[in-house]
Length: 107
Image (tube, rainbow, N blue to C red; front, side, top):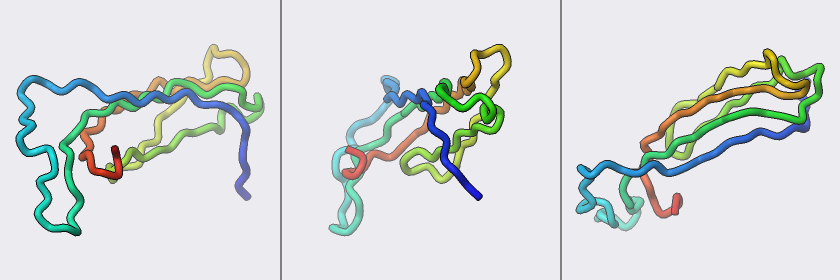
């Protein structure tokens, strides 16, 4: 049987600056077929999963985080630690950088 636990998770998503060697000439709307999604280029995005808090103390060891980012095929499962933390808290300290294609749906 699956259930739901009430708590909070701290996640941040930010776009990273691109290097000076990027070529923007191909980024703005190069799709020739009307059914083909228009590409606005690529973006480096950093996802950070920091911690979860406000969790029931008896279930802190069983907390997990699983996520997918935008157009990426992989599902990430960051590990966590509860050692030395206040009761009801789990620390993830997970960062991952994604290179994503920006389409009209993303904007």
